[in-house]
Image 1 (tube, protein in one colour):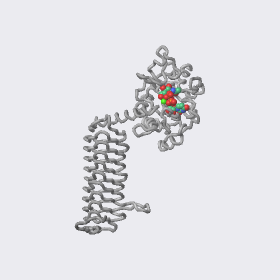
Image 2 (image 1 turned 60 degrees about the horizontal axis):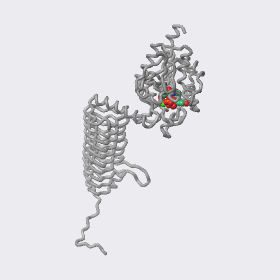
Image 3 (image 1 turned 180 degrees about the horizontal axis):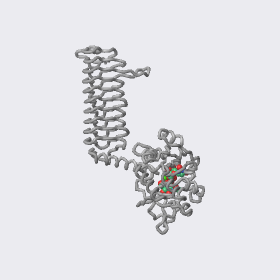
Image 4 (image 1 turned 90 degrees about the horizontal axis):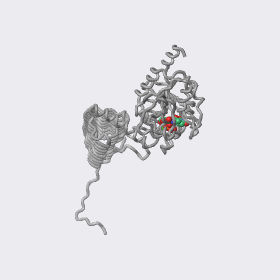
Length: 462
Ligand code: UD1
Ligand code: CA
């Protein structure tokens, strides 16, 4: 290779090959392993996201077990899929990705190492280029190397990788392991891949053999050191839970550093997509997911479940409340034990109390429903009081749904049923226990109640 060629290859872009065809037998799950979520996000999506963030945009995913499902889930992620029909080993998986159609550099990653970060990949690429390597193998040293392939050295120099299953007792003691990440040039990969044989205990084509093959071809093959997170593979449910915990922990650390008060981070669960502003207090047992955004000085009491919800400043989410895909404006108070279902919006200083369910409804400023109510498909004005036990009857026997409109400054007494579609004008009062079937004009009183009967000295007939 001339110096000019070398400079050229140094500047070539990287294609990622992510191996994800394996069954994941040890997961004991019908879901393909790489789709198992780590802190709410499929593990392979994490690997894909890191590649992209590190500037590797041509991504080939090798699918096999559960290929249809994997493709479905990853459909919008802008990757290409290559099917490995039979899982004959990691080298065979790489072959399935048609490396002969790749020019330039290649980084090979496992789909089951979800804790890798973009900066890890950036570092590997930098080192591969700076050292002008033919093959870079990312290794790391582990206290308990377990089932990882061992990095065997001879006179300090990289010599081979030996799978734990095939390793001698002596080799098993080695603590430097193969993380399953390789950087190389397409030309070199395509030169060595055909020479990989399946002469091992599992009768599989091991990609790890590329190391000794490269060395015997006098290529420049070196290790690149990876951090521990890079090596953290997920092969069973216990490792999956560990990975999730690590993601939660590191996100909560960032939140606490920025001034969020998390009373017991070991028992709080916040996905890394969630934003929380300083001064907010989060009690134990809360699980906060997705694209949730929480403002300053909020109080999230124990066991709240919050997903994809926008919560502004100084909001109280009281114990045991469940919120989904909604907007909660400043100074609202929700719960304890309230449920806010998708497409709801509570404007400033709304209060919904215990056992109140709100669905696809907008509640105006200062409106209150303090206890035991169902508010569905409604547009409620400001300063309205919704009494205890009130039901917005939105669902009819013919299975159609209808809307209710309630104006500003209304007083809806306790145990009222508003049969939709219906409109209650501003300032109206609805007597307790009424079943309202006709629109009520502004400032009117509506009451539907049978007169009370008194029978003195009443004795039931025997
Ligand atoms: C592999 C390495 C091992 C390394 C470890 C890091 C080999 C032979 N061994 O072992 O040295 O320490 O990763 O985690 O490479 N896959 C396919 N098709 C196949 C087989 C596997 O796509 O035919 C995929 C799997 O879905 C997985 C990845 O390749 O994402 C690794 O396979 P796995 O069986 O988990 O390999 P390990 O035994 O962990
Ligand atoms: Ca693995």
